[in-house]
Length: 451
Image 1 (cartoon, one colour):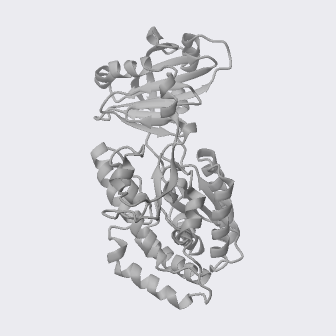
Image 2 (cartoon, rainbow, N blue to C red):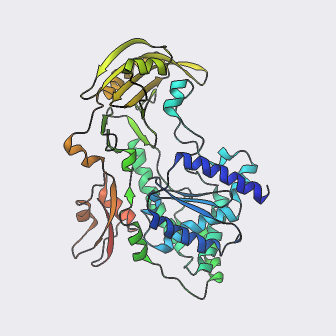
Image 3 (cartoon, rainbow, N blue to C red):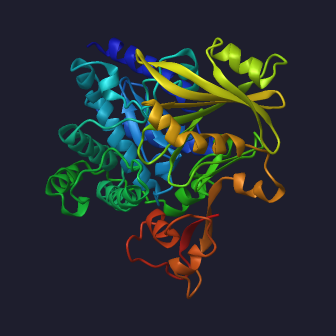
């Protein structure tokens, strides 16, 4: 593949990426990241290539690269970093993927979707299912495999050294992210979900990875005579106020309760169900995974009743229809057969109208017995939809990173009491401060908390 073809491939993939993920709205942080990428890339093996970097408004723990110089880093992963040098370590690694043309090598082995993940599997097929699920081919990147990841570490460490950073920062930041991965995998197993981890981490902890240490040590020969500062405080100032977890514009999921301030919407899902809050939809399923529930929102462009809207949506294929009245909204629901990947599946669909907005609810199951088994839970979810009550508006706000100076006697256990982090807040604070598993703040030290 020529470089022009590589750039064209990356440009197309970037356009698809931006259709599914939005940039994080912090121009100063974006400029800061761009400047680091520019300096690192000028020390790379492809100095004539313009690198485009985007900070993504995603809670996922990731950074990744596409062919042609397109680099992405999520706000989710930046919350775990504690210095400019650590940020440069991750960005240098991703620049290494581009300079080594790993995306092009992956492309030559198949298609671009080999390089990109496919997100959460959602049943699609019929018109209503496609509109409700609407899944594309792009999700946060999965990684390139052990050989290519190690090569990206080697190149990234070299670029760090040439730019004036200590290449050992590569090991430091990977160690922090490995600790996050270990904690997250245990938590995800308990909660029955996929872990949220960085693609560039291997089974071995970086402290014990001899090959990683070898490539980092080899980078010292490229060290710039002008050393750069770690810039811990400068970096922390740039991420103060950083959103942690879901963005307000996507709604906030707290346990099985969903709060959306902009939509003025509350939904409660059944206990024991797995719920995913995705940028354009909510996806939920019971523990047996025999049914999938998808909720989407759209503007209502005609004055239609819920029944009229739903009948048009599914082209009249509705039976046993009934009106639904929630605390604040009116709706209509019924059963229908959904053509899922060429197979007819039983499902329940519903439409709930809130002023000039309509919510489409689709529950599709593998067979009629599964639908019957979970039907009451689906209806209860629909009936739970209402406006937010006064005290709930606060619950629809995002959590953000705040900086404090540690005082004598402060511990992560005591700081956790001030935090809104769910599930093991003290451990989470240790993780984002790079002090997991047993570190404690020192008096006068800048510490990140989440409120």
